[in-house]
Image (cartoon, rainbow, N blue to C red; front, side, top):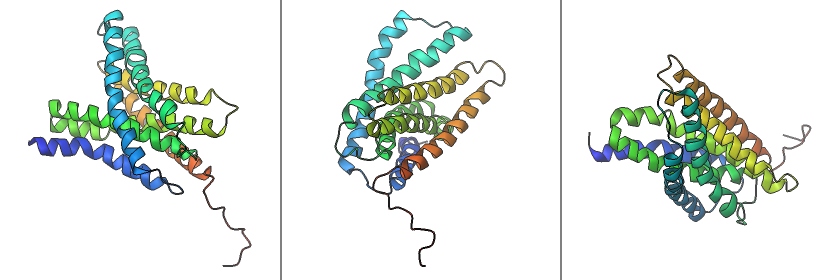
Length: 234
């Protein structure tokens, strides 16, 4: 299969998710330049992940087929490192931007960062693994990264407008790490019969929670027109 087709398949899931979130940002859309910047910083976060991971991998070697060691691998060496690498840009770059002016913006910027990370990662995996990898990741890994991003962005968006609850941003980081870790762990120990189904269950739950978070933050927008009274003339 040609490299062009593989690249298109690698880019497609992230592009679709970005378009979906952009459409869902109904009331006050973010500047395209900031969305592009967030996507670019998501790519940068993959290199931050690498910088953090290299010494950790050397310091904490993981033995294969050790269920406890694989949990450390999934939740600490992968999930925490990757989500923190994305979190630093969401919380300390875009959170302070004046365009971050409604709760839903937390989800928007988090998705852009997450899709920058996931798309760059996806390109590397797809070029190496080919068509089968492209199709598998189109319906698993990339959507999973989107759910992690929505959960993180939901809580960061809340903190922006609930200044008396400074812990909310870190709750978002924890939620993303827990779902990411659970998803990865089930794949890492897939040699245990049937446990891979846990990754699918984790993804389904993440999608359901993400859909709910999107609706909640849409309704919380200060730019949303209030519903007309029920007795209004039609």
